[in-house]
Length: 161
Image (tube, rainbow, N blue to C red; front, side, top):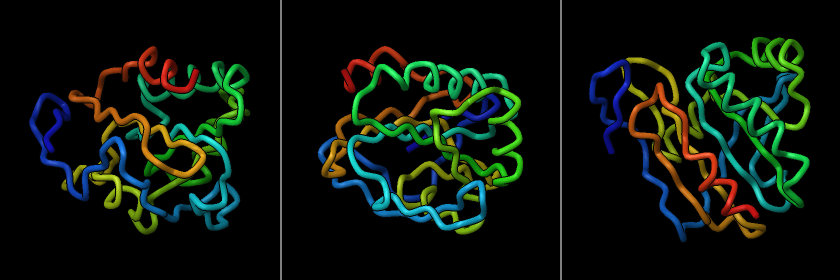
């Protein structure tokens, strides 16, 4: 799959995830440097992959999902990036984000490769949304075609409502 990054087409590395797939288990790093596993989260999940929380679109996207979180029953919202856990924790504190769980893929790039969002030569994640049901069956996927643009919030949120 290809997406545009800074106006240039880039072929993503990893395996593309599709609606109907069972979401791959992955590990990442929590803000306290502990190990995060997808299987530790029960219920529905919205996974928002972003390049960096310190960019305007990623900032706005994460704030938007944080504000929507209280209206979404039995749903955990995860934002994953290559940002270091320390930076994620600092950003959440400064932004007042307290309903979205931020996790980092900087160490193993396990999520990046299993969900097909790795931008080679850039070392970041492409922007993508994955929604999983209680059994981790993928219900919604959006690989945003231009990494610097917003995802389709309404379509993703409609899937959860």
